[in-house]
Amino acid sequence: MKKTESSKTFKSHNKSGKPDNIVEKENDIYLECEKIQKELPSFLRSYFSYLKGNVLPMTRLAYLRDVKFFFNYLISETDLTEAQTTSKVTSDELDKIEAADINLFIDHCRKYMVDDGDTVTVYENNNKSLARKKSSISVLFKQLYRDGHISRNITDGFDPIRVPKPGEREIKALQDDEVMIMLDAVTNGTSLTDHERRYWEKTKLRDKAILMLFVTYGLRLSELQQLNVSSFNFSRGEFKIYRKRGKESVMPLNRSVIMVLDDYLSTERKTVTAQNNASEDALFLSLQGKRITERAIRQLVKKYTSIALGTSRDTGYSPHKLRATAATSLIGRGNSIYDVAALLDHEQVTTTQLYAQHKMNVKRDLVNDMEWELERTEE
Image (cartoon, rainbow, N blue to C red; front, side, top):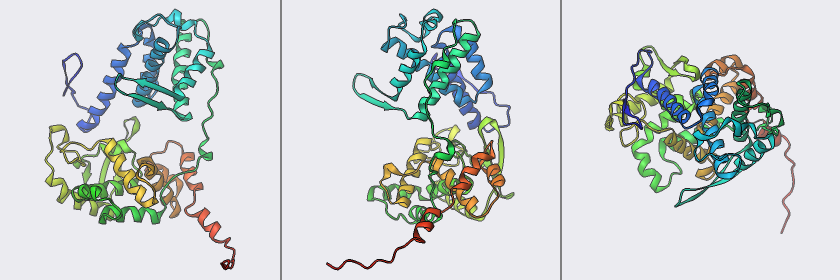
């Protein structure tokens, strides 16, 4: 239950069988989408319906945010509309837009500034993000053309954006020895600063359990963050997670994970009082007694992976790279890519095959086999 902008109380009537926190998160995405749609012209209803029926909720939200950003760009950066607000942009104005105007918009998105009166923030987007924005606008203009709101399909004139193919990207993942360094750091406080150690004393068991779940199961960040105490059935040796597309998945527990979870649940978890009903069942709590945020999880993962990598804190790995770590480690131990694909919830086994190509230590072993015995130069 929560207050909406209109001050009405939004109440979720959950009969889905899913935990309330999962349903609440889905509802938050739904409400945010509905809010953005009200800020856009009503003639986009068909576009809204297309997104609702054909893409995942988070993708729908991302597309709507992109379209709203595009309309704000038209208002503040161009003379292509006379509208003062995003809801007042007309279909006639959109019909006059050329492909070149869209290409200029995508170029604008590469790097732009936002001045809120007190701070000027510079935003940058890489090609992957730009490709998503281009896709959002392409789908918009194709739908407008199908519905007869514009007279031409201009999307063929959009400039291509080269995004590296999966096989071209260097897969970033921890090696097994680096995983052990990371787990030693969270177990013993190795290489932490004095400031970090003060927090580590209070959260080390929680943080260790989080890292173990990531490197054992390759969970997505949202899947881990939404875990509840009631998600676990220790007598059956399993726990339940909720995947993308609303799928339920039951995961088996191994001894290592049971041990770290038992350590955490029997000590640290008991010392923190949940601050609200929504947090009572949350597996991982902040020191303030609320469900730990995705941002906090990202920060702790970057911290401990940076120790394993021997780099600065800001160049540590993201939770998604621990997902890659689980995949490469499992395949490196001889497991079938089909089994690993099932564990990680890959829709296409070709995704898993990319990790199979990334053999652990292969470059290091090759170089070590090419040592040249040289005598040190005498000074």
